[in-house]
Amino acid sequence: MFKKLKITCDEATTICDKNQYGEATILELVKLNIHFLRCKICSLYTKQNMTLTKLYKGYSSSCKSVKHCMSEEDKEKLKKALEESSL
Image 1 (cartoon, one colour):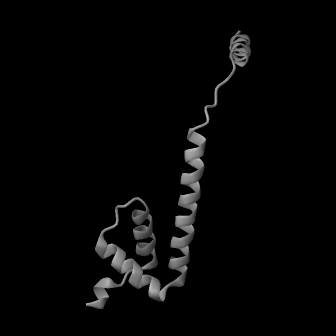
Image 2: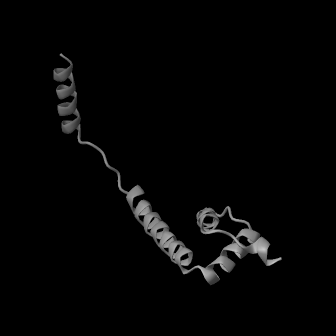
């Protein structure tokens, strides 16, 4: 019975990645937690992966609120530079 619950480190990282997007099944999460009992490296990978995801989500939400637009003056300069380079 326990042989069915054993997974490799490759499978563990795949389940970890799926879990971040809410795609992991309950059985996969059980297998992953059992794997963590004997593999501290995969446990550390999951913690680091979750931290990076949280950081990215926090950064991307603040980045979306800022609009990055060129001024009309810069647009005109760019148009002139493009026209000159095409001649």
